[in-house]
Amino acid sequence: MKHDRDLIARCIGAIERHHMVSQGDGVVIGTSGGADSMALVHAMVELRQELGISLHIAHLNHMIRGAEADADEAFVADAGRALGIPVRTRRVDVPALARACGITVEEAGRNARYQLFEDVASEHGLSAVALAHNADDNAETVLMRIIRGTGLKGLSGIPPVRTTASGLRVIRPFIDIERSLIEDYCAARSIAFRTDSTNADTSYTRNRLRNQLLPELEERYNPSVRQALLRLARNAAIDDDCLGTLAQQLRDACLVCGEPIRLARAGLAAAHDAVVSRVLMWACAQAAGSGQDTYQAHLDSLVALLRIGKTGDGVDLPSGVRARLDPDCLVFETTLGQATVHAARDWGPLTLVPGESVIAGGTGVTGAAWRVRAARARISGCRGGGAMTEGLARIASEALGEEVRAGDAGRLWAVFDAALLDAMGCARLTVRAARVGDRMAPFGLSGEKLLSDVFTDAKVPRQERSLMPVIECGGKVLFVGGLRQSGLAPVGPDTVEVVAVAVSKDERNP
Image 1 (cartoon, rainbow, N blue to C red):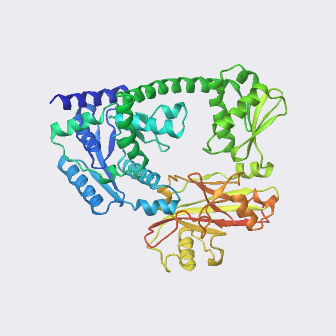
Image 2: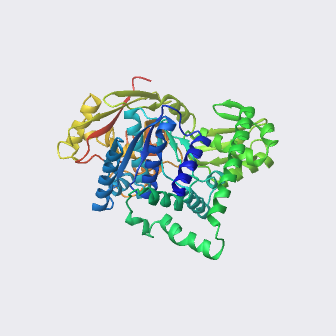
Image 3: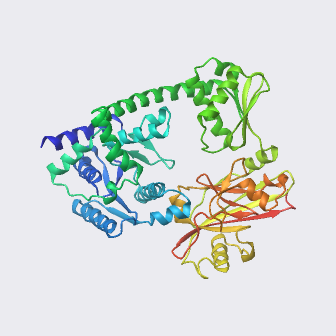
């Protein structure tokens, strides 16, 4: 019985070391039915009295493996009942979701799982979700990131604890425990589990790495390569945390102004590039108003500008941001002109509440005011033939509480499947002005196009483009008010809840 005692001791050690839970917390355990997640369920059941926590189980049927997936779902439900733990299962056609959202099956599955966790936590007042990632998963993740290219944060591997945007704490009690010990624990405790047949499918990158590359590295190069990767991750995490703290101190010391962002040149020039780069990444993201990635080439250009540039020199960056040198400051500003800045400041985020609608207004320099109305509402099905414009118009009118004309579909109003938006990670819609580099997947077309090309095709005058409201969701352009909607999250026969958006232009109300 040594194996099961070792696992429990190391599990409680990780929980205490990383402050994963507190007395009175409610925890939902993400459970696939596999060995790792079933071992986690049993370990948390054994520890729940000592930790003073309550437990729920959540399982997502990805609808990829047919009867096998259905059997997994039934297995998890039965296991939860046998242990006296509430179980929530959900079925999502993940391949269809991936196609509808224009993302990979892996990404769609992850989004759907996390949406389930968020929903269960919200419904039952839970504060954390426990996932069964183990030390082997962590080593594989680090190796995969090295192969694809990464920085210090990527080398840090899977974090033991992180917090989602909604405040849900994601904990991984097994993150320091080897897969072999978990399997020994299952054997010692006679814990039943399911085996996913796709784990052997080498068409998936992670499976090739796990089943082919890592064993070859162990056999031919270093039998302790997994331990070496984990040491690298631990050291990288320590260094990353240290540099993050130093960068925050430098940012606070150098920030002269927040709009536009102005950073004191003297303070930046005196600091190490490793710390300066993090401050510059933060400034780029703030100026862009989004989570736009800043690539190494951009950072190299910014550091060179700071070190050897002269007053008046500048560097163009993604999302319409330009960094330039003033006599005393490094300034980050948009390159879309004052109309864009003014419009973006007037249009704020729209947080959607089921059954309610919200209104935002933005005024462009021409004096034309845009009114943007959005609502989230349940429907009794896609009446009127599902995708028929007249049926969608009725759905939009009911959701918004005001009549829309069928002839304005996709231009002045649009409706989207709320469940698909949730799976894309869209907690809110953001209304903003167009940015350089924006892309969208226009409804009825395959693939994405630059938004500038969509404007050109529609013959929208250049001076008007920055005044049109862009509705963004999860970093993707969902709808350009007055122009076109995207093909993301389309309403279909199975839609039960929609997000409706409508825009109108009032020339008389500047």
